[in-house]
Length: 400
Image (cartoon, rainbow, N blue to C red; front, side):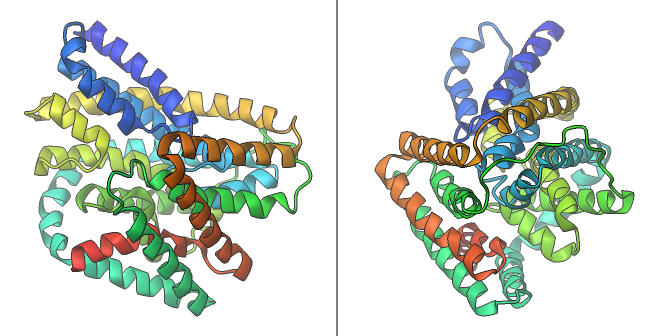
């Protein structure tokens, strides 16, 4: 039993490296492949071991996922907002610092979430009932606050409305697989790359040995904000990590770029651990990987949760080392190529992946979303308004 768990964890970490570093390949896809192959795999591994594979993969993915977002500007749904400050760090020669901040967020959130797990059980148990009926109104209040606090309120409203309508259309197209990838890649990825390509002829040397100065107060504030975001994604159906980050930012002010990178690093990890809490307490799965775990291990008991938490800690500890080592490799390689050629190559890569995964319809969504994503950078309004592509559909789902 112990040997097969170790093998499952090692294989899960290897799979998490692939999904974390490859834009467009999500853990949900691999999880579904494991589920479909479960009748065959169960001859060699127990169902608990298969569940541990998925958990170690998911945790490793959450640590490595920021690397393509920071260095390539190719986000998935959980790292979309992190592209913006991450890319600024990269263009200033501090891409590795941005990565370290997300790793601090992920590992800090991991330790804090495990320590607070008994409390989370009670919070999810009673908190879900208290706020579930008011989800739509909470989101509406947050949207109004987001727009009113923007310096250019009319443009903020326009960007939110345009991205929101785009989201309503794209997310409701029948048979359209993985709609978030082309939409978010355009709103936050390609639009960022197109803006940056005009002002940079070369990539600055990345300072991998730079000392990271970080106040304890800011770190704790960002980590607690991440815990709040994770709670929202765990208990509120339809609220993803990026949306939860927007919600948290309205409550936790003045984080700055450092605090924001810690926050974005922490959300995925907190979300995953709290999803296990929701599975145990509410018998509800809040993300694709946890849904597969639920199908593999139908009767989740506390002993299973304890095993899963141990696997989470092991995979997280290994992922810290992997993220920092791979980040150094990226930092050294990215300065050896012409910046303009690199950006053009990344743009072509994203276009190719979008076409490969979503065909011509995905390319159309990518073009439209890129056009909308350019507006905030041009008119100097807050780019979080583009999260209307997810927030508006979720809000209307609960209000109508």
